[in-house]
Image 1 (cartoon, rainbow, N blue to C red):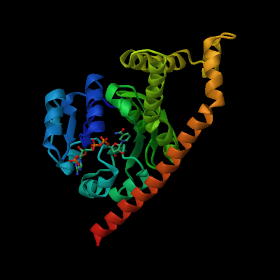
Image 2 (cartoon, rainbow, N blue to C red; image 1 turned 45 degrees about the horizontal axis):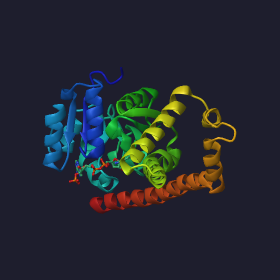
Image 3 (cartoon, rainbow, N blue to C red; image 1 turned 135 degrees about the vertical axis):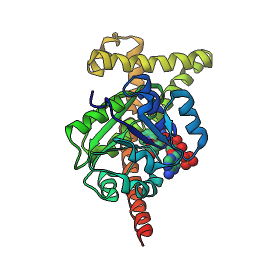
Length: 287
Ligand SMILES: NC(=O)c1ccc[n+]([C@@H]2O[C@H](COP(=O)([O-])OP(=O)(O)OC[C@H]3O[C@@H](n4cnc5c(N)ncnc54)[C@H](OP(=O)(O)O)[C@@H]3O)[C@@H](O)[C@H]2O)c1
């Protein structure tokens, strides 16, 4: 239990910060007293204090960092330069800094903190809100195996975790970061299909969502290749093969591959833009 006894500062108690706080407390990974949350919005802090009994410190990021062992940056990437400048003086070499800010490289974070501090970059997805996220984590230059284990434990509280090299973070954003939006579209389209064939919208929506959930669980829990599972439900001259023929002739496969490719490309463009903006913002502050 690498997290036991550690104090966690969660900077930014928005959607993701709250999902992490809830997951960690629910899973008993850390006690509520070991979590210090900050945010600009008093109502967000009121919510986490009342729901999870964690400590809140207004927007006093330096104080949260001073009192913690692990700092989790859950603010928007656009706020990155400001928050890093605020906390730099409080960062000690023993700190572990974890960032979920999309597009911001560990190199930039360590540089702005002015120390050879351990930084782990993480890309969760929105399903953290229901404990079914998949989070990719990547170690920065000074992060050790132990730091990664701590990050795995933190994100394990809101779903599953994969370790990747940092240069694959755009691909992760293209697949699992953006993926919920793709799957929502698929669920909506399946629902329309059901409506077209005479089902009520409510029933069709429930059938679609549960079918996607069930199929995903079959893949995850059997560990079998999806093609094998598909073959198992595709009887000769049956209904599934008729539908599959339609999907293949209409190009579902290249369509989804292209969706991941386009989202990855866009993630890379945004990452370059955000990194440049953060660098410019910092040099303006220094001037
Ligand atoms: N949502 C996702 O699906 C998702 C997935 C992967 C990664 N991420 C990353 O997670 C991060 C948070 O996203 P989110 O969706 O949780 O955003 P969010 O709901 O806007 O949460 C960010 C919170 O940080 C607060 N904040 C702003 N400046 C601050 C400061 N100086 N000190 C402390 N708190 C401050 C914001 O307050 P105000 O609203 O008043 O500014 C807001 O409550 C982003 O960097 C995003 O790239 C999000």
